[in-house]
Length: 244
Image (cartoon, rainbow, N blue to C red; front, side, top):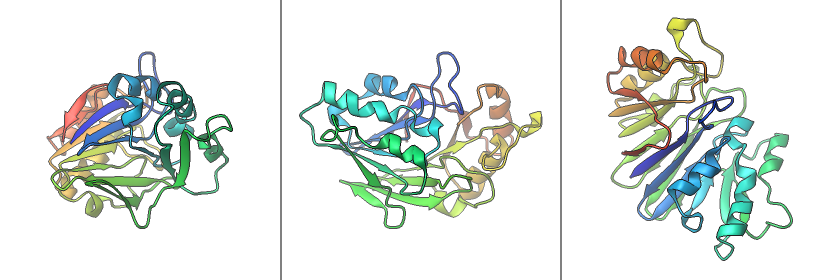
């Protein structure tokens, strides 16, 4: 299983950076997780549009879906003969969900479907299950298993929901660490780097990637705070591919 970091910043992308987004490749399946600003351009550097299996959206905050409206035009231009791309997003009352609906022109290129948060979903050998997180907008963490390796992505969450059982023994945990507690940063519905590391420690995961940084967050400070709790922690590097 391979995971590529398309972007790691929120709520806006700094110069040269991108919003939250990941590509997971395993067993002939290619999934895009979220699609913040700047991620569709980077997606094209990583995979062929025709090979994208599905998009999974954790929640409907704009920093996680800002680029997904344009995805339908990418398909229309570069892969018009492919089957409609399924985009699974939370079926909740939020007007921003409208931006994921295909336009009339692109209706045959993309299909918006409810995120199957209760039953999970399978793509060939890949199984994805979901857990509700601690976030003001309904948001779901994702556990992706291919029968050999397991990746868990927290998406946006505070420490008010214990995701340790959901992330138990994962080979790689990608956890939001928006803030650094030592610098006086914190906000409801998001975690500090130390809280992300504590989750990794309690879940017994092998490795932790920190992501979802405020552009003003000192990355070195976030890494230091996390490693003091869970040594196998590092900041996710944009456009780097990690083997799970």
